[in-house]
Every structure is written in structure tokens, then in C-alpha cells.
Image (cartoon, rainbow, N blue to C red; front, top):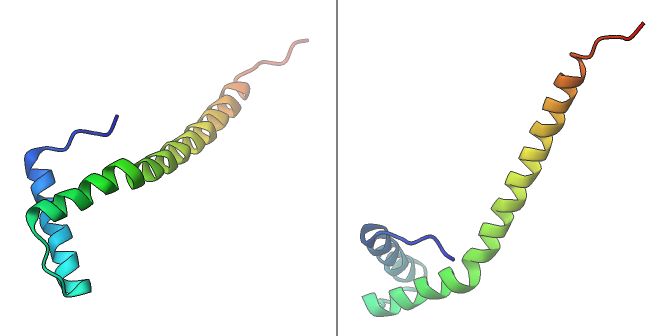
Amino acid sequence: MFYKLSKQQQQTMIADIQYFFSQEREEDISEFAAERVLDFVKEYLAPHFYNAAVADVKDIVEQQFSSLEDEILTLERPIK
């Protein structure tokens, strides 16, 4: 269910992974190895970030709904 990356996005991420390994670990990795790292991130780590984003959106929508509900209640007219 992961968002499908375009070929350009995937190539950019692979290059970023290669750069990270080069700069942070002083290790050159092949494009294939970087692609495997990307696959690991997509399969095992990305769902955690995705679920956190969903929870954040849920909180925002609930806050906005509550605010909207308050606004609607101010429209009520008193009954005599």
C-alpha cells in the first residue's frame, strides 16, 4: 500500500542513500545496495512515519471539527 514512487524519485533517493553512506560511513555502496536499503525503508520504516502522519491529520481534523461545531452552536437562537 506504499505510495508508488516515480522512477526519478526513486533514482534521487538511491543517490541520496549512496551519498549518505559515502559521507557518514565513508563507504561506497552500489546502486543495487542503495536500492535494497530503500526497499527496507519503504517496507519496514515508512509505515511508522505514515501512521504518525495519519494520527496528526486525525488530530487536526478533530480540532477543526470541534471548532466548526462551536461556530455552528453560536448560530442557535434562544427559544422563548
